[in-house]
Image (cartoon, rainbow, N blue to C red; front, side):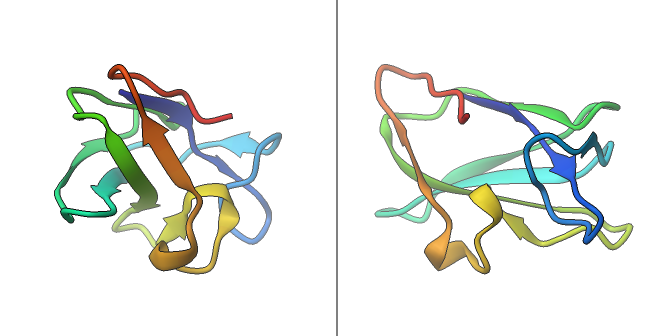
Length: 95
């Protein structure tokens, strides 16, 4: 499971400590070895929960049809450089 909140800075990229949103954005977690993954939509406050992920290393990104993103975990410039989120025992909450 990966649970967190998208927050947006003035430049419309996620940054911790900024305003929440956007609602209805798609957040995807892609396993780095197999390329498999899952995607879910954010709630009204930009929160998301990607559940039922097998243990592995994942890269996370978000986008929406209203012009947000793509944005990559921890503000990286592309999916290949996004920080890896390690799932062990079924859960991880990015900081």
